[in-house]
Image 1: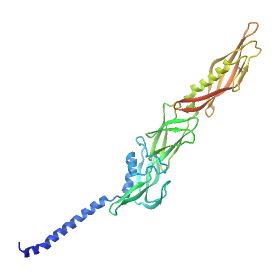
Image 2 (image 1 turned 45 degrees about the vertical axis):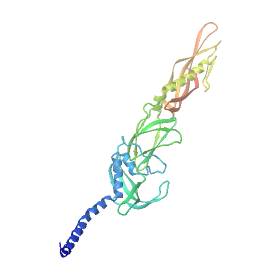
Image 3 (image 1 turned 135 degrees about the vertical axis):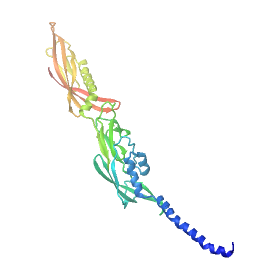
Image 4 (image 1 turned 180 degrees about the vertical axis):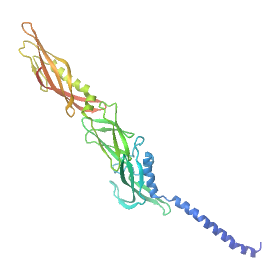
Length: 337
């Protein structure tokens, strides 16, 4: 090849190289574009994971966990929750400053999110913060969480209640203690221990924009069903003690009094039949009790005599724990039967 021929072919070679670069440019741009992290795509993936029951997937996206600032753990399983439906995410994120309950303020994009829960429309906001990257490939993360803590409290006389919320088993305590169970949006079944001494009714709790507060309490019917035998036993024991230590007079510590008429010599006391417990609670966790006691003695002439007295009192459930029921009982009034 002569130098003159090589010179004539050089422009063509340069043209072919340039054409190759131009042809490759769209493909390279498409590759770069596909690698960019779209904050809205991240937001869409988050409620979609919740709507599909993917608690672990939602946890991985919402890196801050529950947005309450109270240090709650990541939400529990959604295996048995009635899931949210019809999730919608706004097209544009609002540039905003967020003030969390704890920690420093931060700048973020706020995307409107709505969904249907138990027939109701619920709206909220998901915040996405840029954490780094480049202008070609920025990096984003979700700040906060759509999860909310369901707050459970126990009303006296319950002292402890083992309960399953969703798939999370917890033990609640009485008093000022509030047990918090973090849950993603959905409707969850709250199932108290079916083998507890006092069995409470299952309930449902809807976790949406705000965390619900659920008070666990036992009705009079539930207390009587679980503690009826203990109430009767306590009342019977208190009455037996009165009768055992009686001489000519029966006097119970709580106020019931009986004295046989015209007795001569020691009187024998006995409880006639069983102690009765009212079907309806007198108030709260206290029931009226009733029983008949009989005074027996022998007159100097050998005549066997007896006198009957109607006693009334009350029996109260003081505490219920998973280990059993604590009750107290006393006899307060008496009259001739």
